Image (cartoon, rainbow, N blue to C red; front, top):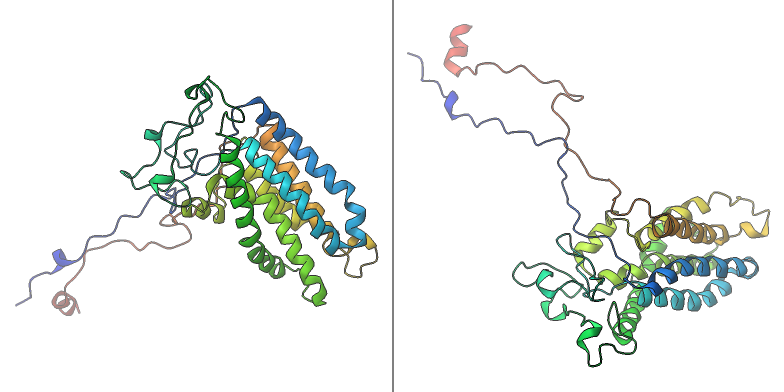
Length: 330
């Protein structure tokens, strides 16, 4: 007597996910420019100013890279800090998540507080994640007399300078060491050890050009920095993310002209790499901030599930036999 079939006890075949399904989803919006004529004009001038400064400092960089890069940190920090305060909304004053809005150009204020990711949704807007820090910037018309000195789109100057200082501190303390390690992994010289301080200064310049505006606009939001690490920040009209990508790519390309025998003075480490960082940063900003190309688009590094049958052999499905039926067939 044969045993009853147990085919009905077998688990169903799992459904394969769609090939275009994204395993992770970006959660950030493009960084906007403040809606003022000063912000738009200074954003253009800022790119030109930084490139001209590095151009005139080229001879000093070749003569003494360590001293030149160390002294240049002051100007680059000041220039980037002014750019952030004049042109960009600070973290917590705009809705950086994908469900947010834009700055209200008619009032010069950010989106109303009710559109922010508040405590009801549990969203994380700024680095603190606390709803008490998500303050709405009052429009100029709400102040007595209709306007105030130093206030406008983005809030008062004091409310913009303070976040810029905190962002500068974070930029000088957090990214340089990881960027230095990445440079060493990619081929930066370990010997002689006297070149290691130059590598650290190079990483600091990259941090100031590429990451100071991100600290200013996103704070230390975990979701935003996850998108930064995954290269998923959207390209924006302010040129922040394009400048970051351009600086990293330009620094990598800038290492190509260096000859191993150091037959020319300007080929010493890290002159060509720093020039590549600056030129890549400028090109990235020109593409999005001036030419306004690719705004809102993201670098697509999403993973996709492999379709059944793509490079694998699928066995034909057939009836499942019980153990007793297999013995009888033999």
